[in-house]
Length: 308
Image (cartoon, rainbow, N blue to C red; front, side, top):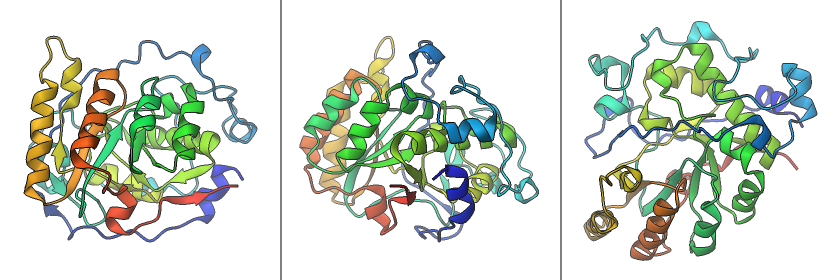
């Protein structure tokens, strides 16, 4: 069934995770690593462009890093807050409830978990299969649409292993700096990539860099999706900076402290690089297999809908 029908017909109840507009005092970070995707080209895409998406969009191939806006009849732009566009680091108005600036959490968002649990951003990647072979628990992967269509077999391997697959947008843009139409395009193309590859509609998403405010929320909610943030950040991407901003021993020591606190929580990690995958494997050994997916953390559904 085409995603368009599924999104129009399917409506979900939000899983309430936190009080309305609660200001979180948990630690988190938004360090901006350059996601330029220099190697992403149409020729490298493996997932065929589906006929149903061709009929709706008029396109014949997956887009580049700046996907076109395709109007959807269930998205009402008049219901989107008039929050002004802002760049990363522009942090002034607390009423917009931004996570990247003020760690503000809204009523339907998830940022913590009863058990200390790993989550992974930015895949699938060529390093993801190594992580899959070592995981002893079901985990949550926040996938990029550009990578889903580039590595569809790895995506399907993740699905076959029973992991929860969620959206991390199409191409890792800082959403608050984009127009409403551009934000919609980031969501819709990510959703279409996941549906074309895995035959499901994502319920959960993580905004890149934690970039979320009330305008982004108003758009995402019309897709029926809920945001997932975090209360523990490994900053594992700093293993890839030159010079490295962190060492693996520092990352592991942080995880050991979080585990010793016995307070649960959602850990932010990445499966985009060999170095972060190796770290993720070791972190899994430190924590152990008694972890939860994001849906399990709040007693929610895995997906809005699964086809076939």
